[in-house]
Length: 588
Image (cartoon, rainbow, N blue to C red):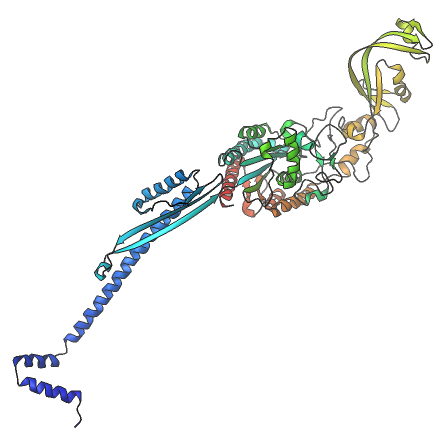
């Protein structure tokens, strides 16, 4: 006989039915089906309650972790700006106190905080125990959350160059005054954000040209033609790299760099103090190299005066050179001569020096304009023999004349003076007073000589006899053109001699136009940026979208490194640059 569960159940129930009351309850239980859903629903509810409790408590744990980590991050970043380990830890603790997590900060371990002269590394750890809401019913009364953060700040040194346009247009609309305020604020901000000696700034004023101080000029190999000025004349290929000159020039054993002729388009004799000078010898126009003194930098900025045309190419060329490592040859010479402090021996630093940021701040208020040069390829008004002569004299008093064959034969007074021109007689004088010069300008048309002091023409024969006819005569020298142009302008030469060849040569043959200067400026801008120098530019009241703005924007490291400014807003431009420089120093 086959048995199944149904047969067995029926039999079991039949037996129970005939026994006791318990059997009746059991039979009723087997027949009742309503309670099965309630049991299942309760089980599911309990399961969801446990899962929800886990979610709520873990969400609370994550929120606490995020808050703790944010506090850690802020605290170590702030602490990394401190100068000492103790100060850094105090800053971290203060952040935790104010955030309400004071008890969460763990004790400092060895090596957590390290501060050096221009770097800091700060590590902090924290931990929180969080009471659970629902997980406690599952036997988990608390949850623990922890975090750690490390901040490392390196504040590199700064080598900065302020390349400032001081051309004549800066005298308009109080621009020069507004520039002075802005530039001094920049110097103060940048200098005060670093330790003494870590920031080195130079100021390069430019107009028609750039005037290096004698300390730099003497350190360079220069083909010197005169002693009037220190301005240098660069060839086009000198702008294709960040060094001052090409490999065959002043920073090598090759050909020295040329000295720029000192003259003015306009002006009288020995009166070349015009705005159209090729080079400005005034102290306010000279470069201030490598200064760590706020006072000296402020004094230099206060002394700036506007004059002349615009040569942004020259300003950038010098700015790039002052940051180029090859210029340490010049720095060493300046230190040796006592013109620079020995602490600056490593300036300019190498381009790949990780602790140094190099930056140029270039301010221009207009487009580049024309500069003038005498023809350099076929020189007529260059070289040894000019039309200007210098006669040297010395005040002296006649004593007597003597016969060279009978030295005891002496004549005094006018009788003696009359013998001075005779071959057998020698005249004796008492020398008194200093030597002095008088100048004569020869006319290439007539051959006669213009007496500059007496303002009259002297025939050639009379001029040539001065050696024997003039009392106190010492020498007669035909000056070089380079020396002559330092005493007179091409305009003066033309007005006196009637020959305007020199004028036409100077203003019309070998001039450098604004467009050529733009090309040269962009070459040196690109070269210094390639070396990692950060270039900021400011267009001060320049036309929107004009040539000046276009060239300044191209020169900047990025379009964001170019700033427009008008009026006193130039202070805001310099302030923005100062803030950016400080940020770069922190992230360098």
